[in-house]
Length: 313
Image (cartoon, rainbow, N blue to C red; front, side, top):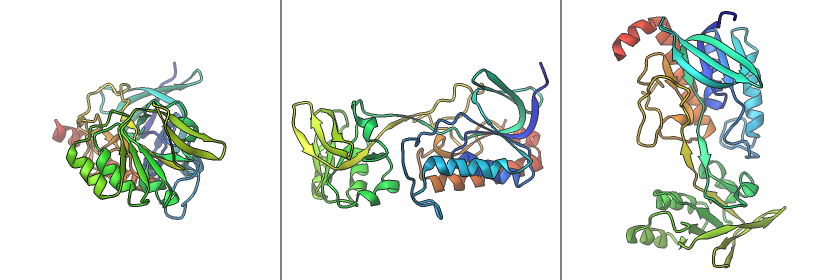
């Protein structure tokens, strides 16, 4: 078997955070391996918003453009692969292994940037996926403007139901919150929502209704259908990092704890984007974080990762 390719940095994940980190690192003349499984969380979304000069662009098109920009640099290697192992090589670097359709990828890198994002889990509504990304969204900051003034639903089974509902209510005065009998609501929460003119329905939800033109309503388990033209859903998110062989500090939600520059608890390992607190953010914010982390990686490589490892230990 041939010797693994050697790189300065391996960036794992090619969303806005990973692409921004890779772009800024190659422009620092770092030899960068960008690995991506091409399974973006926002693949169902038709348009992304709030990204300066790219408002309304398809998220997939934004990724394509970003990959092309990175790949044009001779210092960059862009490869599609599902990474299954990152482990220290005992010589101050990391072994990175992945594969794609039977083809293995093996490399070593002095530093690794984790930018793999999160896996979403939605309330168990049979038709939710059919309307997700068109009539129903998860990011109110991204899509609230396009739903402004409409009769909306908010399906939420998590403890932050009140705060998220009040945020959505800034775009519409006709909002119904569906807890599906799961999200915890106390009297104070109900009073805050009522004061904002937000209706609450705590009955179990059977499904969403609609046709090819979009969502038309919410059907409850008792058969009642409430007309709604769209809405928002609160997913729960999962961090899938079992392929990292060294333990990383995590918060209560499983997100990777980092400093302001993306350094994890393990010297030479960095994390950026949705996999770090506070979790999912707008694309432009993730891209900014990627640039910040790239600068930190470059500085640490200049200063010597061995010294940084001594400091961490």
